[in-house]
Every structure is written in structure tokens, then in C-alpha cells.
Length: 381
Image (cartoon, rainbow, N blue to C red; front, side, top):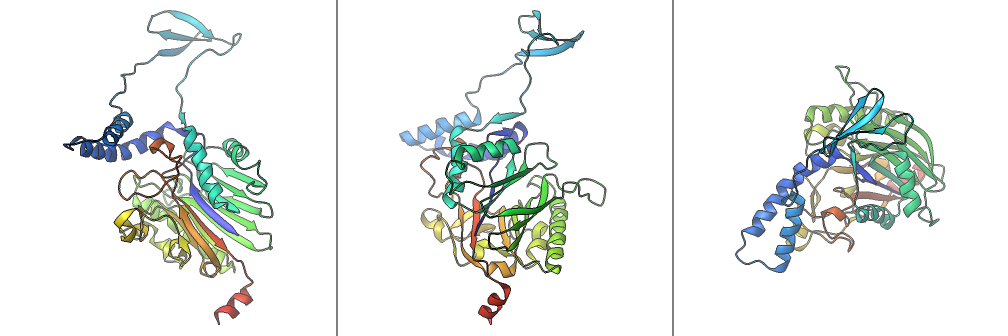
């Protein structure tokens, strides 16, 4: 049985607010790289090509945009006013729509969409937990385009639940034939001490039945982002711990906490989760992935996933102690991520620049051999 978690950062379209937030973060890195290349006394063709790419990303060539037109409801009819100062009826209850409105989302690059599917197809998990999925329709269409035609890669159960964000950052789960969702609970209505919604996205609990008639408890979450208070992330983490401890007290053995915690392992805001005794899959002996290039493959940066994987850890696949001993194989797929700066690593040939990247997050996965508890204890004795 193979389980994966992936913050896919939407499938076909992404909210403008998320794009602008990510641009603010990445633009500083792009500026540093541009200035570094610009200051070189001797530049080759690759340097100039990269500078053109960065100039485009930073908007150096972007023309000034003004409003194309405005819309106004006048006596029940929808009017537009263009720069020509001419008023003409565009829509009413008798006519077809011919108006304009501001889009709240932007389409995702086609190559990026293909690479999103490529990441999942290479690992081929039996259960996939996805963060930041815009809606159920998109998830079903994504499955139809890339998975449904091949019976071995197709998923038989697909579920999507929207959270509190309003930005299309819902969560999805896909299960192959033989795996069944027995129950699901969203904690989107959970309140903090002041009566405010605790989870700005969501925290969801799934009870899964396997083909071997085993029960899995999957806790899927996305905690407050790096630009949000640590105190909020800490409160969210405490709720997850409460649910995890409750499951353990009721005898549950196979529990997984998966998703984007938005903090490195040493962060106090998520320490209560790690203090429960859950095991991070990146620490398993079987864990493998494409390592950083050059000397970085022997370096272990603080807050990174592990030696040779020196990107800041935000995503986790945390496994209960009994289930951790049933892990046979595990790893991380970041071949569809674009290295913004060092470290660098091998990517798919289809990822030629930032726009082609599937996500800013890697896919984490683990393969398990589920055994009866009695057999497990005999093995450890």
C-alpha cells in the first residue's frame, strides 16, 4: 500500500491573491539573481537568456495598463463606458450577456498542469492526499485527463472538500480500487478561544478501509502560512494533537498526519505535533530521492528535509509509531519543482523554467506492508 501527500497548488486555475502573494516572495530572489548576472563583467548567451527570462518575470517589459471599460446598472440595463465615452446597452433581461468583469483567478500554464500529473503518475500511490485543489469539478477533470484511461493508474473514489479560505485552496483525496472512504470529518467550523474560525483553510479526518480490511486514519491539514502568526499555527497544531491522541486512546494503530504545516521541524509552533511520538517519513532508512547537485549533496541545511535535500521543509508525512515499523519504502519527488536558487537538483525535461513547475512543494510518499498487530509484536520481540 502506497500513500502520498502533495500540495499541488491548484490544478487548472489559481486565485489572483495567491499569485500576487507568491510573486512578492519570489521577486526578491529573482532580483538578486538578475543583479548577480548583470554585474558579471563577461556574460555568455545563457546569462543573457536568463536575464531576459528574469526581466519578463519581474515585469520590466510590462506595459502600463488602464481600465478597458467600466460597467454600470442603469434602469435595469447593464451599460459599459469605454475610453471613447460612448454609452451603449450591452446586457439586459432580454439580451444575451456581452459584458466584462474582473477575473478572480488566472489559468495555470499547460506544461505545469502536465507536470502535476507526471509527479503523481511516477510514484503511482494507492491513496493521494492533495492540498490546494480549487473544486471537485477540476479534480474530476484532472483525473479524466491523466489517470482514467489507464486502469492501473485510475482512481475509483474521488472526494473534495472546500475550506474557509475562499481562494480555491480545498483538499482532495483519491483512492484506487479496493480502498474505501468509510467516514470523513471537516474541522472547518472549529472555533478558537475568541470565537473565530480556527483553520483559515481546513483540517480533515478520513477513515479508510483497505483491501486487506485494515483501517487507516488520515489527518490531512494545511496550517497557517509563513506570513501569518505563529500563535495561530500553534493553536491549529494543538487541535490536530487533540484528534490524534483521541484516536490513539481508542486503540487506533494506523494513523497518518499529512499536509503542509508551513514550518520547519525545529519550529515551536508545530512542536506539539512532533512531541506526540509521530515519526517523520524522511527519517526512515528506506527514504530516497534525487539529491542536490555538487557539494550540496553532502550538506544538511538547518530546517531542510535531510542531508542532500536542502529545501526548507514545509510538507510532512508523519506516521504513528506502529505504522512506521510497517514502512517498506518511502521518498520525495521534487523533479517538477524549479530551483529558484541553490541548491539545484535534477528536474524533468518538461520543466524548463518557473512557469513549467508543477508546484513549489514536493510530493512525499511511503509504502507500507500492513501486518496484524500480533505478528508485529512477535517480530519485534
